[in-house]
Length: 267
Image 1 (cartoon, one colour):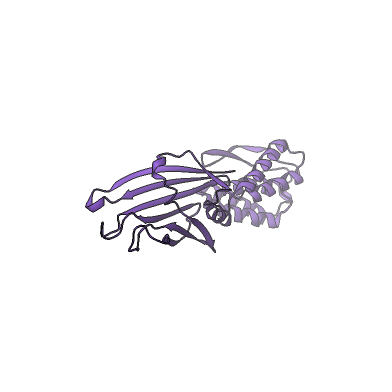
Image 2: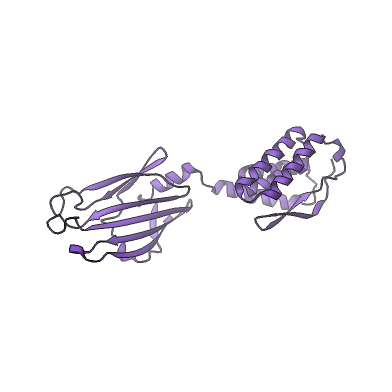
């Protein structure tokens, strides 16, 4: 089949103009009518899409067209572009490589080859839920991570920092020192720890720890300090952290609040 010319008009996808092949291609009459129908429906789904999830409808229509006309290059070209917008980089690269195999002399072959290479790299770097859990569970491993770009470093106290993060299925167990929380003596002996089970939300994790500075004879509530953490996995090599800190004043004094940002950089 001869390749058709790209249309001079296209679709705006997240602000980017995507040019799609014309249906009036030489030899298009040999394509099953039902395949062309699903192709058109796929284009309509792209026009209506507003989020990455919306492109799944377009992908489904192009897949149906592909099943009816597997050797139609334009299906694979468009499928690759839409899969990229849906964040399915590995599949997008495969679709574009299929297009190149069916149309090796296409005028845009070099550009499509370059795009397929980029998408394969993105697919390798993309993080699955399992990857994110493993990264978060490793953050207290000093052999893998170092703190960088610390702001308001005085708020970060190594003695009160999380002792360990352990993965259990899709959850994480956070173990942190608790000071005198629940202890009758000061200082506590042995050291007391609090353990909390938390669930990541996508690529982020939010939790808080409590550390008590005194026993009830000094202040009934043990002079608590609250540390609220927000982690965000940016890549396999970078995790950002924001800390919010509150300390109740001794014997009813005012509470203090501050923020700090940390960056973990993998070695």
